Amino acid sequence: MAHDTTQGEHVGAKKRIWQVFIILSILTLVEVALGIVKPDFLVNNDLVSLSYLNWIFIVLTIVKAYYIIWAFMHMEHESPSLRRVVVWSGIFLISYLIAILLIEGLYIQEVYTDEYITWDF
Amino acid sequence: MEATTVAKTGTEGQAWGGGEEKPLKASYGKLMMWFFISSDALTFSGFLAAYGFSRFKFIEEWPIADEVFNHFPFLHGVDAPMYYVALMTFILIFSSVTMVLAVDAGHEMKKDKVVTYMALTILGGIIFLGSQAWEWKNFIHGEYGAVETRSGKIIQFVDADGDRIALDEFASASPKDRTQHLAKNGIWFSSESSINPMGLEDVKRGFEANKTLRVRTMQITEEGEKEILSREESLLKLNTSGVGIIEGANLRQNEYGAPLFGGFFFFITGFHGFHVLSGVLILIIVFFNVLVGTYEKRGSYEMVEKVGLYWHFIDLVWVFVFTFFYLV
Image 1 (cartoon, each protein chain N blue to C red):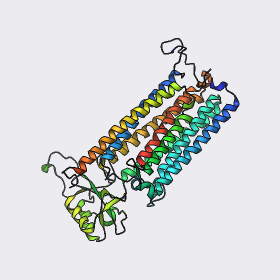
Image 2: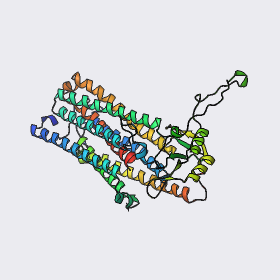
Image 3: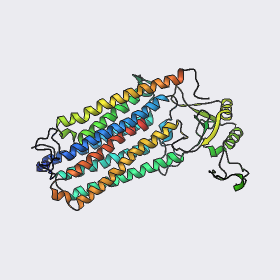
Image 4: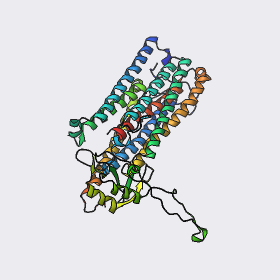
């Protein structure tokens, strides 16, 4: 049982909580600062049809998600099997859903702009 | 002995007891909370993916979030993009911290600390809900107003410098003759708008009188800004394709751009807000259980841990909503 553990481990757990809070705050501040400044070279350069800025936002968001799930939701203390059940099923299903919907959305956008019908009259 | 807390639920040996062998090494309650969270995560990603789908569909005319969400309390007319949602994000992250501190105090069986930290978490949740209500109020009320065109697009108005200008800054409602509606003219009275609303004709007249005004369309240019038409094009656009004025937002149309934008805003932030609301309610129930010593008697604060899992999940969803609705 967790409450049987020694005092030292609890000091460590508290330290970890504040550490993660500081990390999450810094990441959020970086996101907000970039969102307000919007540096030109990040906005105008693309990597796989997504600007550097948006890549940064998405990667930072996933890092934040990792810290919330691992530290706050104690996923790091769960058994590997539970970790895999929750994380991998989520990752597979969500990436499939996103890929399929975004490809379809871009295709419809192509139809709207390239076909011989005007949608703005 | 495992690192995870496995509480005695009093169902040992019964159908729901699950026996001694626990393949995932978590208690029944925590496991079910994880399964619920997984399915709820899929629901939210369904919403966000649908948002992405619609946004990609109208990629060249989607509203720019910085221009829509630029309010901050007590700073009227100051352009403050993002600051407010950033503040909301901090409130939610901090309430997550107090929640995890409550869970930690629960592991140590310190009832007073659990009470304090849970109270702080509930407070954070309520502040977040209030902030979201304020955000909705601004979104619904609108700031500048726009004109809807025949094709369901919208056009907005800018002054000589290219800054947005509100409809009532250049147009005013004209007095209109009103005839008393009588029963002999019709049996069924359906509805009537307010007594003297500003109409499309008033906007057209005001626009013609102010020679410096121009029209801004939904189209996004190469520079990532909305296209501004020349004065001649503006007059032509307004006079030939305008069909009515829009102020603020509802589920059918909004002054910011694509009608779907408003729908997704209400649906995604609303669904998230509903989760926060139910989270606050569950937290309050568990809070009172802690107060009366239910978990002290049970010998385990696992219930605090379970509601904690749900609360962190809400924070997790907000991190994604924040990125995909406000940043990207």
